[in-house]
Image (tube, rainbow, N blue to C red):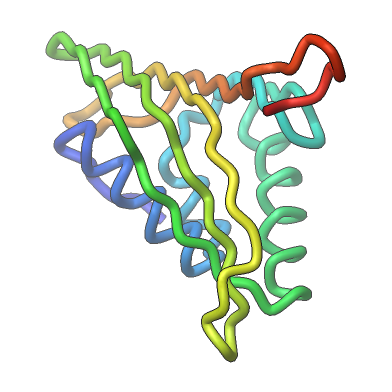
Length: 142
């Protein structure tokens, strides 16, 4: 699937839609083939789109199996860009809802940083880093 993302914000909107639809192909279309990701869940590091595809497929399959739809909200978004490079940082809230009832099940907010590159008039994510603040007494994410 090739889609042109003419603005950085288009990438964030497509991320929300692909996660809600649990569409692996659409989600992966946001990322460059050589993506490098530091994630705070499961597989802490992914290098390359095939590694990321495995992680995303497992994530979306888990949501399907549990009959959960996911709402993604980007908060406090800061975008700094040149004509070919962009840097984004924000807080991203993931809220899971039970598909039949629409009842909220769980919610978490992570800090995200994205590096994007514009190639052939389209932005794609080349680096992603998610994190959670840590409670120093328990060593767990807050």
